[in-house]
Length: 287
Image 1 (cartoon, rainbow, N blue to C red):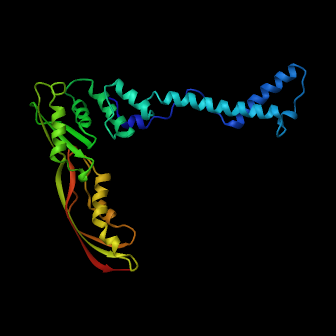
Image 2: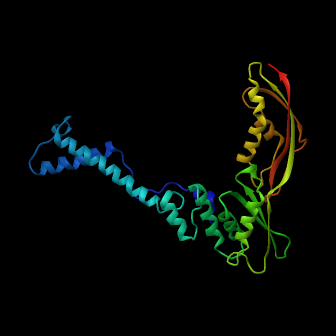
């Protein structure tokens, strides 16, 4: 099965060998000297003179050869999913019936294309439904698709790009409308779209600042913590106590004493953690 991590690990293609301008110039000069000698001309030394018209022409030729080689390799990369960008990526994606959404980045379009390719193998597969959910809205950050038991009940858990991962009713409705289409839903499947943020964790901690740290550092801690989880968290991300302390221990904070949660929060691959209340108590300053 095609996987995005596999694409990201591929080396850049090199259809034609890359050379430096200096090496290209040396090769061109060698050929020029051989040809000149064959015609009875001795250009040794002269061709290396600064400002010599022949030398300038050879430098131009060497520079253009380097550019041509780079252009050939770029053209090859433009036809590969792992490296294509912009309009080139649009054309590659369109081959697999994937159209860029308004405001969609190259990275997200590339990831959606990979999922779409994998999902085309058999209708009703995990990636089949995941591809449909991702194209429902650019606000869909990730999706988990799983079957309940051995019956026809399918759950599609949605993680949002905004609102710290929590999908609102409008986003859930958009995903539901897309996956329920007759062209998507397998006739025997019963699909339920729900939020992936099924675990809520309340955080409480005592904070000590360094003597010279401004209070604005303390005031910004909750926002920083929530944003860190939005950026680094996701489906299957376990919220550990050590991770929480590391995010609160920003420059200027001397000590963090975490009171809640008392244990690490371990979740399933198809779920995501969201923060509930964040209670941070300023305990003074410490060296």
